[in-house]
Length: 214
Image (cartoon, rainbow, N blue to C red):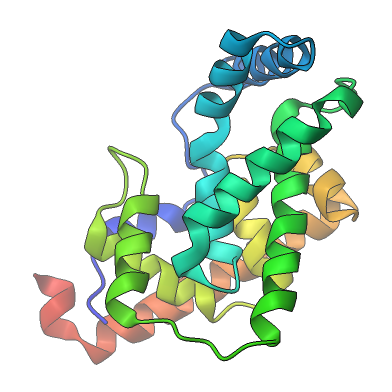
């Protein structure tokens, strides 16, 4: 596994996005407002809601799903479930947290489905999915593959906490709400995940010094 130095960016203490706290708050308020408007049948609001949160949902289900090849299907399933449940959304939490909770259930269902059938994942297809999951301007194809392989080795709860807070950019409090656990637990899981990832990164670099220096 060739590791690019760019992968280490994901292990920094700073969140994945360069946006300020105020910008994130404004973005969450906007998507929540669109979700509430979409609940009333506004087609433009539905489009804004889906476009604003599609990348976050896609990233989440790609890294946590039982079958990375099915990321597009999982994202579509998430939004179909959400749009069918919008009449029950009251804005008590942000639309992003609410939507990711639906994505979480979709991922759990995918695990159940995958456990009932043989896995037919093809490496090339898996890599293609990981490439498409990378937000523009961030990790590229090779870095995305490397990060996905490192994340795969983490325990489920730590991987989820890391993906939610460091890749999706969810605040720790909202990640705790989504995972139904204390904020301190999320922070601990992220810290342990980061330590494990850094250790794995260093081991990979030692095992492939030529690739690491490239």
